[in-house]
Image (tube, rainbow, N blue to C red):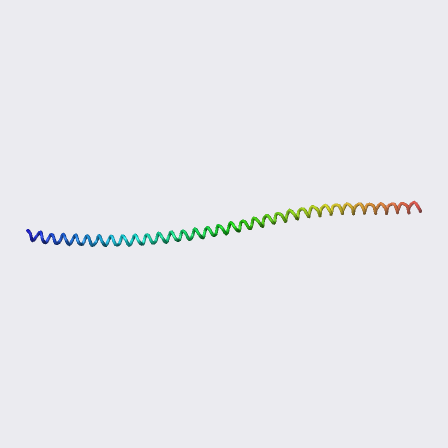
Length: 123
């Protein structure tokens, strides 16, 4: 019996050693997998941070461009208002000049009529 126990004990010991070896192997694989996962997470976080930075830069550039456009719009609106004021003044000037021209033409026509009447009366 002691021979059987000895042979069985060796078998049990070899099974234990094999199990321990497999356990160490599994632990090593788990540590390696954890390192790879950690590296991948770090890479993803770096990518995310880079993308955030790029988005912030793009947003800042867009806000700056919007500010420039708003400034240009304000300047254009002021130019339009100034042009409208000049047009109003010009229209007023044209209307005044038209009225003077009509008055002058009417006066000239009256003078011509008076001259024709005098000629007609003198004949």
